[in-house]
Image 1: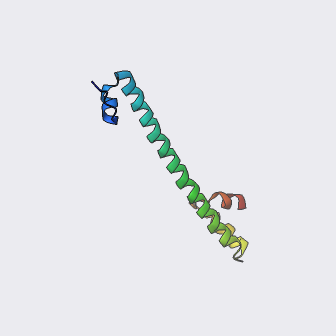
Image 2: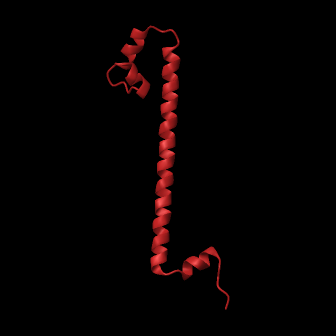
Image 3: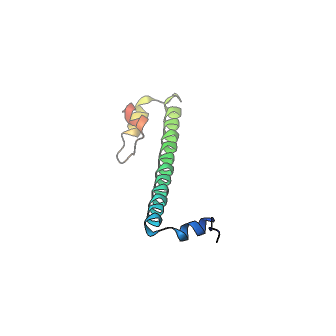
Length: 85
């Protein structure tokens, strides 16, 4: 009798404890990739907001008008805009 060395064969022949450990590892991997993609999205949004603010800042517009726009009620300022405040 030759052992079944396919992925399905190895999983089906594994004990319950090994199957649970593999499931936990799979869930941890999926959760980690979820965090990685969320952080990547967050950093790319922050970079776009920083670039937009730098373009506005160096455009030659009046700094008071930029400041007033940032301090407007319900305005969600980016990190660089908060530093400018």
